[in-house]
Amino acid sequence: MVIGTGIIILRIHDCRSLKGKRKVVKSIINRMRNSFNVSVAEVGANEIYQRAEIGFSLVGNDRQVINSKIDKIFNMVEKIGLAEVIDTDMEIINI
Image (cartoon, one colour):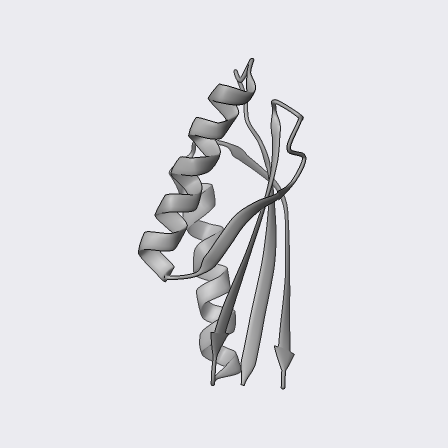
């Protein structure tokens, strides 16, 4: 079994309230879930208007497939253009 995890740190421009941030973050999370069937949630920077940390995980049986999907997730979030991707981090664990 292979477990892949990732964190995406975003800067949300022109956001002046938590309500505006929530709208952007929910849109990104829903697109990730619908496109890649991953477990995803906002995991940090909950009270900061212009910053979001989104974490996700995947499970599979092939390391290369998991690595490819994580790369595609990072690319998709960047292409959406709702927020600037500041940093990404991923880890793949074989069990």
